Length: 421
Image 1 (cartoon, rainbow, N blue to C red):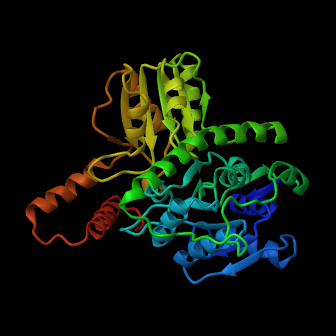
Image 2: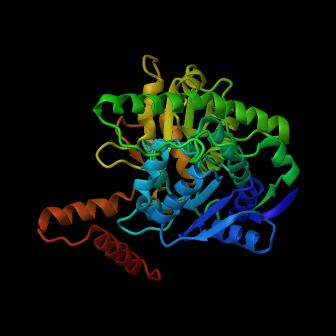
C-alpha cells in the first residue's frame, strides 16, 4: 500500500510486519522515531504478541535483545552514533554468538566533537563485529531491507545491521510502498531459531573457549559470514519475485554499460551522485555508478566483476579512519588486486555536510582530466580554515580544543563578512 511517511515511520511499520517478539527501546537521535512508532503500534494493538521493553541504556538494549534471542524470540532494536559505541561489548557478543538479531543504525557521526548529523563512522566502526551490514539508498529500500534482514539473519544465524542515513532518510517524508501483513507472512516464515535455550536439550550459550579451539571458532564465524553472501543475493531475488521491486542484494549498477570512470558509494549520497552522473553522461562523458548495498560481508567477487572494465574507480565514503583515510577504499583495493584500474579515495559528507552536484562534478571531472591526487581527497575541504589552525598550532603551545578554535574561526569569518553568527 502506498503511503506518504517519514522514513522512521516506514521502517517501524516494516519491522512490525515482521512480527518481532521483543523490541528493546532506548532513544537516541536520529533513530528515536523508529522505536517511538513501534511503541505506538504496540499500544494501539496493531503490533500484537510483542514485548516492548523500555531499557535504561543502549548496552541494556543489546543485552536484552541477546537474552530474548537465546530464549527463542525474534528480537529487534535500533541505535545510532554514541549509542552504538555504548553497546559495543554486547554487539560483539551477539555477533560472536551468531544470534539473528536485527538492528537499525540511523547513521550519525561519532564524537568528539559532538555532532548529531549524518555520516557512516558509527556502523563502519563495527565492521569487524561479526554483523552483516546492509546499507539503504532510499527510504523504500530501508523498509524493504528490514523485511529481508529478518529472513537473512534467521537463515544464517547471524545478526544484521540495517544502516540508513540519519535525518537524510530517517526524517525525510517520501512515498513508500508498505506491504500487507499477508505478503510479509508469505515471505518471512515463522521464527525457528537454530540455537535456543531449551530445558529438554540443555547446553551453554556463551561458554569460555581456550586457545585450543578459539582460532577454529573465529574461522567458522568467518566462514558463516562468507556463506551469507549467497543468502543475501538470493533473498533479494526472492523479495523481487514476491513484491515486484528489486531492493538490497550485494550491489547495483547505474549507467555502467561503457563507463570508463565509475563512482562507488553507499547510502543516500548515491541519489545526488546519480544526478551528477546523468548530467555528465549527457555531456558525453563515460561515467557510471556502482552502489554497494552490502558492506559486510564484503562482496569482493561481485565488485571485481562489476568494475573490471573501468579505467578509474572513485570510492566515495562518509567516514575517515584517522591516519589511514577511507576504510571502504581498502576493501575495493583488495577486490581489484591485479587489475590495471586507477583508484581514488574521496571523503565526503562528514558530520552532515551537504554533498552537492557541483562539487561532485568537479571531482569527477578532475578524474577524467587526470588531476585527482593519489592522496585521499576531502570533498569541499575548507583550506583556509585548516591552514589557519595549523599555523596557530605551530606558533602556540597551549592551543585548547580544536573544535572550539574552529568554531571561533568560523564565527570571526562570518562577522567579517557581515553575516549573522
